[in-house]
Image 1 (cartoon, one colour):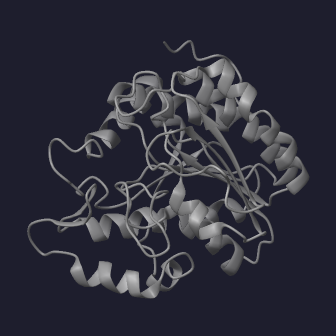
Image 2 (cartoon, rainbow, N blue to C red):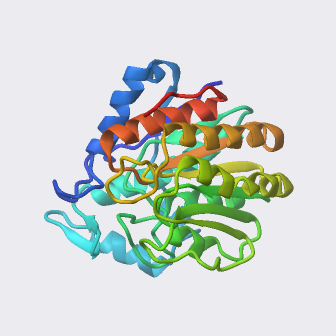
Length: 313
């Protein structure tokens, strides 16, 4: 079985301005590389459905949700925080982004040896229980994790976040929930200036200094795999941010495509052993368009079980 890519209607219509780094071109760049690599023809494709509001309450304050739904503009732009804008298509895009995670969880849990990639935006891992932050409206990965626990009656869900920025929102939402283990690597000190120390025993954070390359990254996160094996998750969720790439303009880590492929392949091996190959990956950051597209291709190949080096620059 190959990876199924979930896409959301209106995810390409959310627009925070031509100069904003989190822009529709990110999805177009990924599509370009999927075509160039041949993965477009190999992967399965599915349309996501918008998340139900009741599912959002699994990870978010109902009063916050009321604010977001009520302030979504019919014209113009509303800023939820200095980095996070809403324009007329944003609420729909955010609902599809969160809905894709739930749809993907349903799909991977309905069979064996299934991996899904949610090619959606806006991203989610900075959104906290009651606040938008850092381009993120709803916390897509936290919604998916809680959905798996509450609606599919799972007992153990792992989240792995290798975005260059600490997923403060995800940690804020899942801390202390021992049904979930969150493993997160991120540049530190760096935006959003959180993550050290970890806030609860179910959080395993790996802060990385600016300039960290792939060799050091691999050494620093190696212990995750033994901890994941001990936890024996029933599904692995990935916050797949690619802004730790050396070419990304918003950060200073030095990872390459092969590093993303490596961790994806290692997670696939663990998934094969402990959860019948079930993985759901959700797009987070990545702002150099070429590096983003190449890194997603490497990530998907790793999730498919391809351990060969990509040869990416």
